[in-house]
Length: 435
Image 1: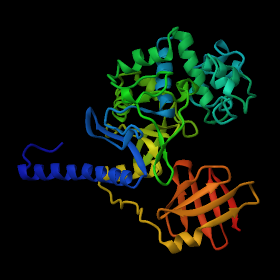
Image 2 (image 1 turned 135 degrees about the vertical axis):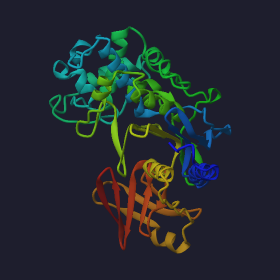
Image 3 (image 1 turned 180 degrees about the vertical axis):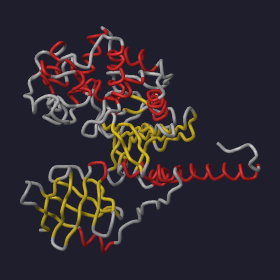
Image 4 (image 1 turned 90 degrees about the vertical axis):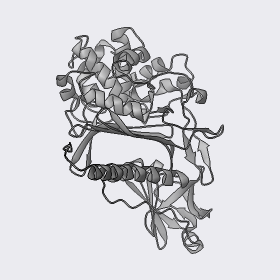
């Protein structure tokens, strides 16, 4: 803290410098929004004090309902951190133990007799991910009890490896933990969330519900940019995500939640120590994010076209959360920019200038790959480069360098070469030749 004997003028100068820092963050996010790269909301909290909170864009584009700091968004897999906290509370209440086996609650799951609560929390079970293993069928989606249909689906999978032997991220683990919370307490997941976290942490806009989005209740839809305008992304039934990804919240509530967690308002220090123990880079629904020599604990989330992140630096008691409901740029890159400006590090704004006709003509054309039965058509639209796979929607490409373009929301990078291109996604490279 600054000593009281500092000159008033010097103190005033420091206040102005701090204001400039947040003004630059605001300008950065507005710049991204103005260039159709981002819609969403950011909150930064220093201890108990919110020092920045602002939303950009619309909660409902079609009805022109602007987003504000009270707009609520789906937070995807950040929900897992809430679920883990509730499980640890039940362990503290001696209603569960870390060694408790899954067979007590879901005996039909493969290897249930060898899978512990500890394994589920640390994502070390071998249970396949019901979201990515195969498609959720129409029958499951339209079932009168979606959760039961998905419990049955998970129970039909073969185990991928022996429990406890390695980490593999699977939404199934936290979907089952949500069921365990309901079975142990004889209350719904939503009731537990309200009683165990929302009330204790004094959250204002955090809840779980199976119902569809209601923009009149300040809930937001998610969108993708088609090169011309923001298009609403199809909405899922929330019970398909449940305890693994279905909670609704705001950045302000997320910063208060994670601050409360680390300040001991939700679980005991021993439980927090368990939660922050990293195994293969993952704790109990917590990752560790480096930023320079600083370390943040938190989690990311993605559902529909919402992208969210939440982080906390225990040394500085700094919490930050960003949620996108319009995603057309890398969330990670946005956060690097926000934190760089917060810590007064140099960070140039990205360049979104329109491409020249010559560059668009150079890269336009149809590309084919011997590796996959897919052709990629590249073309110009409104001064931007677009790409479209066979039978798929077109998507915009943002220039990173003269020959490298990205589609951030899908994790796609395209490197153009003299007679073709290389498409990179999910750690895999596909070579395409220009026809």
